[in-house]
Length: 259
Image 1: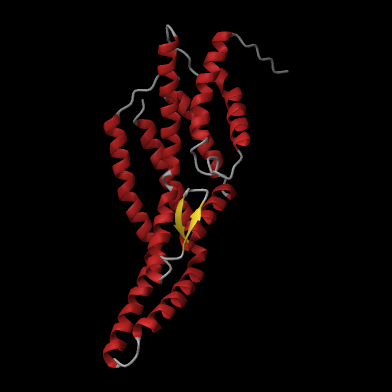
Image 2: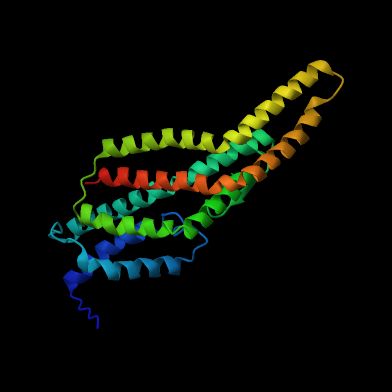
């Protein structure tokens, strides 16, 4: 039988742990999607908090009044947001790659509003995004994200954060470089085929100038682009592995910048 006894001190510690976990849940990939009901997010955050708050190191929790307690709450909220952001920003890699792919094949104007990301996304970027989210669930990567959140309490105890803003800025810089590298690797097959097609169209424009290469090229780019996407659909697990590896890397870098 599990027995829980609450006092005012325990409840205040419970709230501090809940603040970090709830801020993480509301921004983390898959859990923080806008189509996930808020009651589900709140319930998940409370359940996780109830399971882990008894094992949290509380030796750093020292406050003398409401003002100092508010400062601790803000620090816990920033910690949860940064950890969730570290995993969530990696989703922009696949969206950026999809934008470049649609730009190459001629679908960059066919954008749509994605209520999940609250932004305009292209067709291919949105398709790849949901494929990656599906693989995230299938491969139990969401368990790894939650495990990283819980394990971070041993490295960053409540009110034990030491924000190294230079290290966090360096983590953002590292992410920007990795984003362009991974995105180019994802869209490389389409980019290479479209570049070859453009070369062929350029040669044909010189050989047969009476042909309207602009009208012919638009149709050929779409056909070739869809064909390449269909052929390379089997590479999605490898793409997901690159994204998930980057998530782990960014979470480690952000956690290192807070202790």
